Image (cartoon, rainbow, N blue to C red):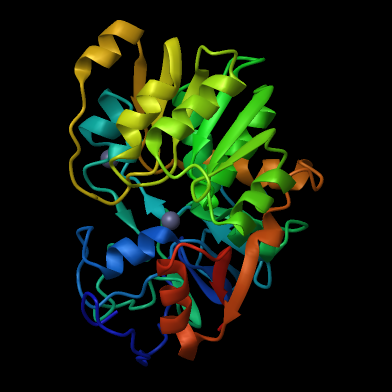
Length: 357
Ligand SMILES: [Zn+2]
Ligand SMILES: [Zn+2]
């Protein structure tokens, strides 16, 4: 990306001659396009220019640096192994990492596909490329029997949902409303269901996205085209939750107006998780009286740690087709059509788009 809101360009950079100890050069097999990339492209997140976007990537190790002998979980690593990695790099010793233990808010955090100027060596720091250079300290995960389609289909949405639902725990038997049927909504649905949610309601659209929600086991879906106003959606949620509202509501839309609507969908003493606002989409009036009166617990969750990625890969390995993440991939583009891939994602109607360079 040469500049915000400008077409992406193909640029050539020299491959590194030397791989530092602890680093790896990886040939990209598949790179997911995330909604965050659209926000980045619009300039809604702090990022240098130019950058190579792409923070959910699968590739094959081409060259291993000295000392990088195992993946983050201790599995032996060799050249030729298929891997993925945590996009975010945490320092481990700042106030947020070491003292208050909020490492996703590491003050020295950097992320592939977001933080590195591609004009600076080692250049290759994002997934929309033929190669990526994994710097020392990257949490690398060997994939073996987990497919690239499942990993990119789940994308950063799954680790985001795992982290978010670790903070706002789902209790067994909970009724859960998920606002949004995009990748984050579907991942939140998968994690909520496997955490014991027994009634799940997904609000979103258009229809193909709600069909995906049904394929993931949503008990009910509410189409925002059919239930076009807030009062109608709220009435439907109340109707499906014995008139009381849901035990938990998860925001996976990224549009500020859904938050006050979601507060109303919580039962008294319920909980609300704001998961979808990775980009700053602006402010919305909120009546704090609702939080007091309903005794709501409101949670936030930012990005993820390597342990969430480890859990996500294990979850994909063991969930045995219950949540068909690989089927969320609807569009695949070669590198020279990355602009189309980004534009299709920006319309918020497709399943997941990927680049296969
Ligand atoms: Zn993302
Ligand atoms: Zn830190």
